[in-house]
Length: 591
Ligand code: F6R
Image 1 (spheres, protein in one colour):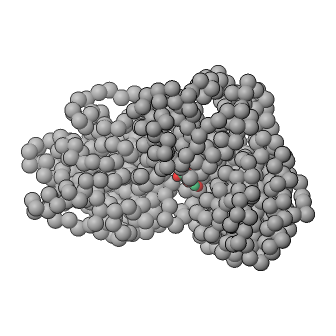
Image 2 (tube, rainbow, N blue to C red; image 1 turned 45 degrees about the vertical axis):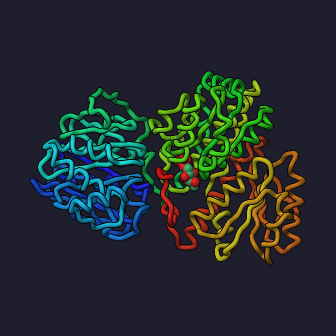
Image 3 (cartoon, rainbow, N blue to C red; image 1 turned 30 degrees about the horizontal axis):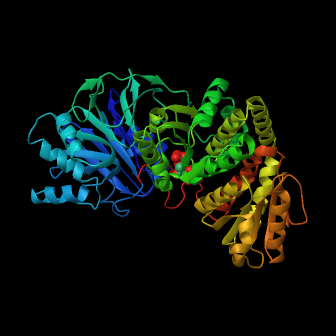
């Protein structure tokens, strides 16, 4: 949560550049924004509440070679101008932007107040510039002062700091992502995520935990926060293109990314077969395989319990990453932890990895963002190759995750080729399904139910996690109260919620549980629900039928897509911005 972006180099419009670039990180937070520009020996700070996308960067076009910017998702302190970043030292010579949480900030703040420092905000971040200010009493070197200040901070942080009299931009990370963009022509860009500087360079260097960098725009030094020891850093060329990271002709990233599934699923399926076999063997050999993820990624993990059971006759254990503590004592050297994450930066997932590693267990990551912390820290990593996912609501990442998990299940059953064929056929069916007529059909359905405040979704087998996922999607973007249930659980309580014409969606496949889920749908209909079947074939149980192709074991991938489209249109028709859902940020880097 929160995006940070800094630049130092030859370009003379650093303020404008960081404002324009950080607009590409708005998915990380959109409560408030701020920028600090260095002009001569002055640092000028401008900040406010509201969305960074609404800020005209022209007003920061004045000459400046060094600047830092921030887009905020509030954690400590409400959404106010005072709490927006950058924060400055008492003498206003140091400016800092931060992503993460300084857990011992209260104690540091009390200590600094006693020393005469004045605080203007309620944030944890504000202690950082004040700590640096304190440290500058012991050294003239700005980078050394930042390093000493970082050593006093507990928690997770990525920071950018600058000083009126130092030519250097200093960045440090512990727990939150930070990436350097390298351009021999322009200088150095440092951001929470690559889209901030993709326009200028695709050569990157990743900071690891406990690392800091110091740059004057001409050269860069990587060093350890703990020891100050310098070390070289590998440059990596990223494969994502600027076009992939843009909206193109779509009104919103969410719809663009739903439509990207025409190609992204096939890309996820086209994995290196040998690597999939290695992973399948690791699962077969492991004494206990655990899957963790959060939110949508968690629903992919949950669906895979069914894939592994039905396709590979193998038992795996799923827990939401935030609830993984339940399994900690089962982890051994022979265990395997599979972590699923689009961003590769989710704090709860990283925590699960840390525990698993401390017990000697191996970690397999299935991620979208190459070079993310999870990707780099796992023992094995598979990329889903969905391309940049910018909308807060995860869509194409989910279907990529499901495809890779299913492929592994088929490989475990010794049927990798069969699985690959099924998934590629499914990808092609989805390509056909995502046509303008189909989209309009679902838009019409959204129009007809847009006033409803409650909506329920049921599923069975792998359609059960998809019912839970459907609820997340509808809740987050349209703010309709949506809940997902296992069809068989309805009569044990939830059916009491159903009133006359309550929309109830049934996710149906063409398999051994079809009869059961149709019975559950009829039970809903008998209580007056407006039943909407997402199913390969029509049935008298449905008041409305959304046709989906019959994809056999891959039905989960197909059935979730009309719901993604429905969630999108419900949001738009209810006057919400689907790309910026209330209270949410895409990358959840706090626990
Ligand atoms: C919902 C959504 C979130 C994420 C969750 C995990 O649409 O996007 O529930 O799935 O925050 O994020 P990643 O996959 O980046 O670990």
